[in-house]
Length: 381
Image (cartoon, rainbow, N blue to C red; front, side, top):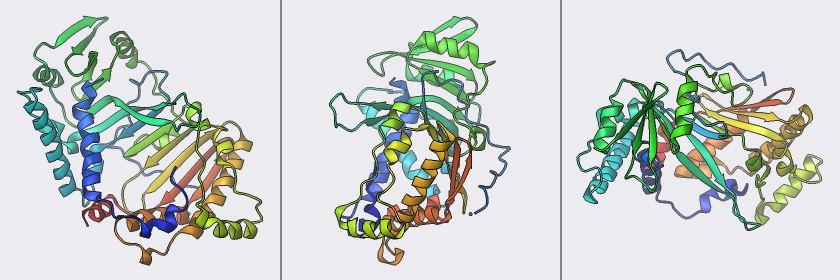
């Protein structure tokens, strides 16, 4: 994790090519959705506003062993104020990537349909994977799995599109389920199931995908955490339920330059040391982060601890780090560029943070004035 001192040193860092970095990340991530998938305040937190037009995330096609996930709604992100030009830039990057593939002899006759525009992608669900190196002391690495599900806002001829990708598309039928086998995009085939005219499901094993497909119609929606219904319609949700990952949590480190500030903080708060977040994290079963979009919309962190005592200890630890973070925040007037937007967001969330505990369940909620458009505008400067 980033060190706490980053808040104090933000204005001293070397300039970053934010436009290039942003385009690189956005281009790669969003291209992966379309092409890469083929490769294998003091009162209790407020109730979320109803979103009748927004469907819950479809998670019935994740495998039982999947513990971590990322679910997002590109159509909502790219319809935010200030995102129009940025969305156009990303669309051009995707088309450019497709053009590069065609120069290499891949997907020669393929044209990206207008139905696959970012503003028409209703939801994307991906599994999150972590790799744990065998060498002790090595940091674990995060691997974003290929999308398991892509769902559009409108109907689309997915089967026809797949045939345009690979003319020799193989279709098999069994147990009333049609499955498509895609080859030529990696060392192993990818398998695709089309449950309806808006949705595409990916997997790397035909038998397992077929089993999911036959059971999904009657399977209940999986509850990924206590309180899942509060976040299942958010524009972005990240869940980590792999206890091995949580137990390997790396605690925040304080830079030597901030040790004096830390010493004063500990004395003022009658603490002998900062709480050990590693120990707290080991007492957690799962965490879920959700991000709502809009002025003052909430950012929520839901935590299921292993006991009421563990939940209380974690809440106390977070309260200490919140106070320390506020002390280390540099005045916004001293910061410029993209860092100022990040610090504004962090400051708002720390200032507005509320905590609610119900037994072993914790809910943290913060709000901010910072918008997606603010970040885009800052990256252009």
